[in-house]
Image (cartoon, rainbow, N blue to C red; front, side, top):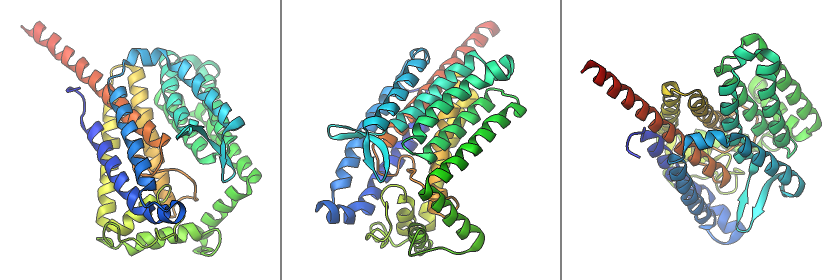
Length: 378
């Protein structure tokens, strides 16, 4: 593990370490109130981070050819787990998203999103949309992505299903699909979103709250806009340098989900504008290195896989930050590597390891090319 892009390992590890610190800072009060233990969430996050590092190392050493061959099996396994969680999963806040496995809780959605990217990279390499037309080239991958996204919607989980759909759309675009053909998935996605909003009033309420805030400047701070209002108070009170690590006030049960979906708000409150800028820079650097690996890939599977994994992490980060700052309707998406959670952290660290493995393959290919040219010149 010496030839790859080490930034793809160092940056996620740095973000994960930062996340552990912020999880403790943002959850200690909640741990005392709910479990009489300020370290309750910290201990769990440390254990999950350890598992994530193991997953990162394992995926950094993975055989990419075997992974490519196993793509259909991985998608089938992920779809099966999604069916199981809908049928017998743990229900919380009206959604069935978790499978209880002893002392662990697993969200199959996180496994499904990485399995879908691996499968799409496998499929699109063998059947480029530009070469096989609309029916044979575009409809099959859309059907696969739509099927997985539909299972996620049934939990219900509109935000994760939507980001999976966007990731699939971007991968199909990168695979060379003609632009007129891409109007079909865009239209289908819009129809699905409208249908979900009409059948799930709480989601519609979030959208209405967002629209009133953005276009009307009004926010129901004592009702549906409470969480956003407290988030903006936290971010605004941070100023340039913040209140200091551990000195935030909104985590004193004012801001719901302070250690998960809104951990950035506490981060900005305690570390200020400069700390938030450093976080943005770290995330941006990681995403740039990931896209750099994709552009240097010599194999279509490697290119699509690296691009899909990087775009997926970037979309989750963008969505989380947009929600925390009032630029998108409130939804339950974690900030990659930073938010409290098990499945998301495990999958994101595994994705980082996989990106590193692709960078190793790129370096090996470039080294062989240089060696061949040097022999020919000699």
